[in-house]
Amino acid sequence: EFRRVLFRSCMPVGSGDTSRIWLLGFSNAVCVALLFVYSTSFKRRLLIGNVLISLLTAWVILVVAWCEYNHIMRTNNGLHAEKILQETFLFAGFAFIISLIREVVKDIEDMDGDAKYGCKTMPIVWGVPAAKVFSGVWLVVLAGAITILLVYMLQKAWWLSAGYSFLLVIALLYILRQLYKAQNTEQYHAVSSNIKWV
Image 1 (tube, rainbow, N blue to C red):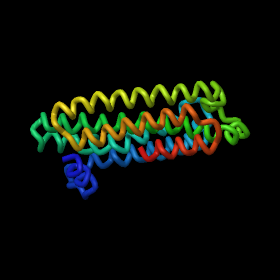
Image 2: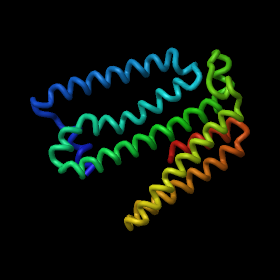
Image 3: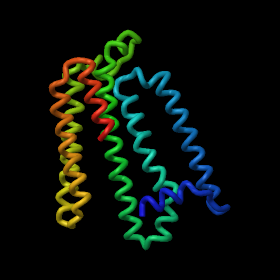
Image 4: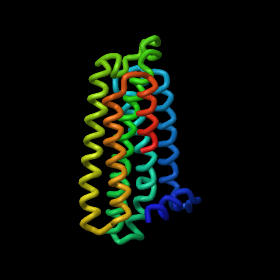
């Protein structure tokens, strides 16, 4: 159902959807402006750049539900629509957290270069151990949240989804171990690459 809504959101819209298209165009312009501000200013500041990129990553998912909310409510009898919206927010939450983790790990990886340009990223301001703890805590939170969903999936006998979720938890715990052991740029790059795969 989510894929059907996604594909519909890519199709041309009728004249009744004009206001939604203007809002979508405006939101895209805001995203472009935020990316420009990020590249010129926020990238060098403590945490704000990381949070901004993570929010924009989550927005890629949320924008589908935002643009299609009225259509979803009209055609899916409320309860089913509510489920689609809940799943959308779950995916967006996952995207936000995993992107935030990766942004901080990338800051650790690029710390020497960032320091030369006067950036105030987390590992520069708080130190590498604090940045690793920050990322590690979020990895644990994410793995815990997916484990809770995994239990729900097992109760519903959604075996395939449960299997994928189990592999995801294992991957996150492996990344946590990898992050704990990382000491140099190459190792942090490997951690960042694995997070990107997840």
